[in-house]
Amino acid sequence: MQNRGIPGAILFDVDGTLAETEEAHRRAFNQAFQDFDLPWSWSSELYGRLLAVTGGKERISHFIAAYGANPVLDGATIADLHRHKTSLYEREVFEGGLVLRDGVERLIRSAADAGVQVGVATTTTKANVDALLTATLGAAWERMVPVVAAGDMVKAKKPAPDIYELALARLDCAGEEVVAIEDSRNGLLSAVGAGVRVLVTPSSYTAGEDFIQAVAVVDRLGDPGVPSRVLSGPPLLEDFVDLAYLGAVLGAGERGSAA
Ligand code: XBP
Ligand code: MG
Image (cartoon, rainbow, N blue to C red; front, top):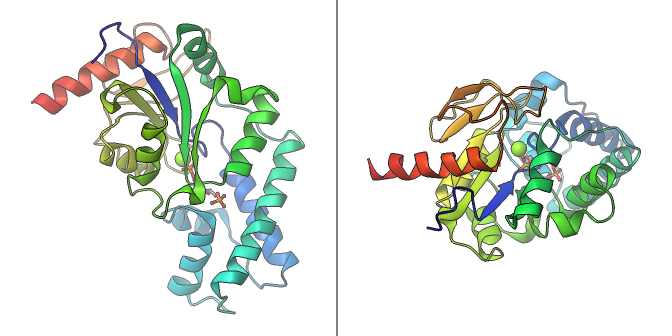
């Protein structure tokens, strides 16, 4: 492993980690159901349970199978419905309803300045990543976040390791130099399965989940004047998560895996 005290790359999860997006997803699902004349409406309480299944198409299939929802839709109709949901979500995001969580933009910009590669590893579609990052970082986001592993680029979504394995293959550094930033247990297990160490920033839907496999859990990445609080893991070096802290996460993970 390189020894400069900072990671070689950072892989961000998208939904819940870059921004609190799940309510916008839920609204888009419900609007799509209405537009397709389906008698379904997901409350936030039900949606919290459905989030156990990652990926929108997979979530709809699970809803039909596990809740006996009618009508039973075939795969092609679910794909159409989900395409419509994606366009509704994109429209809402482009209209500017979402902001990045504290510290996300600062970390992305400081990584770019320090030559640390940045990517995303997500179960949502590439179109949704594009909408969110264009709306928040501007059209040049792909220069700051050049690696995108998303949605159906792999067969098995989180908690399977596939999406992190794909992202790792697109980085030019070894998995042990990479820190993943995740908000959910499914995402944590996916990254750990690919051999990547994880910092968790729980989000509104995932706050009660078990993050025992994470090297560190902080309530937020924080910013100057917006302090972060460590819930488990190494103590912060500043009031917020910076590249040196992510380096400490790698170091602590190394000791943990050697133990
Ligand atoms: C979270 C998800 C996604 C979104 C919906 O993804 O599970 O399925 O809820 O997005 P992550 P799609 O935390 O990995 O970013 O409808 O586009 O699948
Ligand atoms: Mg997430």
